[in-house]
Length: 111
Image 1 (tube, rainbow, N blue to C red):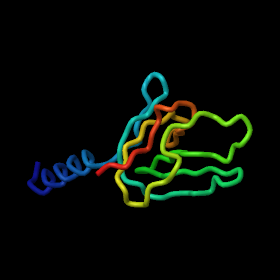
Image 2 (image 1 turned 180 degrees about the vertical axis):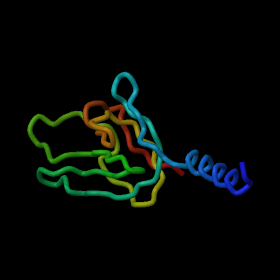
Image 3 (image 1 turned 45 degrees about the horizontal axis):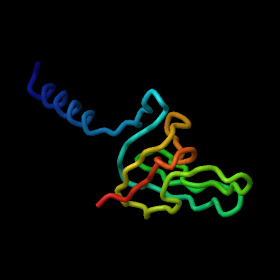
Image 4 (image 1 turned 180 degrees about the horizontal axis):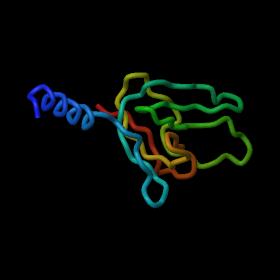
């Protein structure tokens, strides 16, 4: 193999190892991961959803539900964009999860 091809192959392997992928839920549907907040949506004041997008995963942190209030993990506030966080949540799709349903779910700010 020519040296240039070897260099390109090594670069591709290195970049592939650095690429992030969507975290996968465990057998109970729980996702655990960390990353940086890319976007926030504070729209849960009436009947919407508050969420933080963490490395491509939308994490619902609260909804505007008022009847029969559900159990939520913590926090019920949103960290700033760029902040590193750790997440434990219930999977709701390939790149989505929620803190709803268990007090043990969280979106915690990391140092």
